[in-house]
Amino acid sequence: MIVKENFSLKKFNTFKVEVNARFYAELESAEQILELTSQKEFQKLPVLILGEGSNILFTKNYNGIVVRLISKGIKVVDENAEFVFVNAQAGESWDDLVTYCVDKEYYGIENLSLIPGTVGAAPIQNIGAYGVELKDAFVSLEGYDLDKQRKVCFSNNQCAFGYRNSIFKNALKNKFLIANVTLKLKKEKSFNLNYRAFQEFVQKKKSTEITIKEVSDLVKRIRMSKLPDPSKLGNAGSFFKNPEVDNKKFSELKKYFSDLVFFKVDEHSYKIPAGWLIEKCGFKGKKSGNVGTYNKQALVIVNLGSADGIEIVNFAEQIIQAVHTKFGIKLTPEVNII
Ligand SMILES: Cc1cc2nc3c(=O)[nH]c(=O)nc-3n(C[C@H](O)[C@H](O)[C@H](O)COP(=O)(O)OP(=O)(O)OC[C@H]3O[C@@H](n4cnc5c(N)ncnc54)[C@H](O)[C@@H]3O)c2cc1C
Image (cartoon, rainbow, N blue to C red; front, side):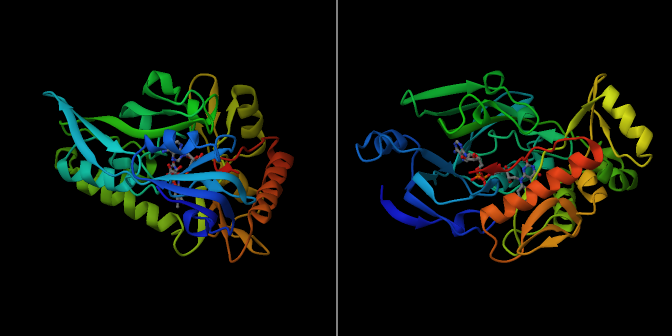
């Protein structure tokens, strides 16, 4: 294991922000984290586990050790008549895991095609798209508790998954390294095609004729038409979470905004798309210096050139203020701000 000093992270965050890590190490296997963090030199320093940096915004140099896990491997670990259990190492690309499952016709995560990032980061915010979340297929994970310096296994329940949330964003924030993840996929054809963007496709096809590859390709096409490619335009996908409001607030909003877009969550709450709120405040495609929102999706903040993290955070603050003033709703970032 080689530890580098004063290492540039520009290549390792999709916002393309120029910051340095005081120390940087790549681990070929997860257990090396114990060796690294027990070295006297590093014992007292904070540790940041980095995947592909597609959900992180650095606002300053990192005064600690940045660790990237580059372990690879995807394998079937168990199966029965109905299900197959697939285990993937944290350093695998998430989309490579989806492609593996699509090729083998293991059903369950095809709606999560083309989400950037690593397998190890997927449980952190319980990644989700088009009506499916990681938790729907998740069985367990193995990892290392950095405080207790020992290996631990977490079941689905223990991860306390929520909307873009888990125990790893709360009690175990920056205290845990995810080493590998096990998913449970269906062998029988089964799709979640309720999402509005799928309707045209569904209407044209008989449900028995639809293939997993077609669904995955459809998701990829929709994503590519809506979201900026981080290799061309620095961004971290949705910058904010979609806020949830209670019935009282929902009725108020409906009264003042007849074109309100919303999704019913349950009897007590509704989700309002943050992109719609931001667009209504006139921020779609708006630019300010080196920062702006994407012209096709106001929820995505983009680095138009050489913006630093502070500039991006200040722009995000302007959006939060504007949405709060107009709608009385406080947006919260989905991106991890460091
Ligand atoms: C264009 C674009 C589109 C996106 N679309 C979606 C989407 O549809 N749905 C969605 O949910 N997300 C989406 N995202 C966000 C992002 O892809 C996911 O959050 C992804 O899981 C981040 O993976 P990463 O490897 O880049 O993690 P990073 O950004 O490197 O890290 C994210 C967090 O996870 C922690 N972490 C990373 N790896 C580990 C590990 N092995 N152990 C412990 N902690 C770890 C980090 O410390 C950090 O807190 C999008 C991003 C972009 C740029």
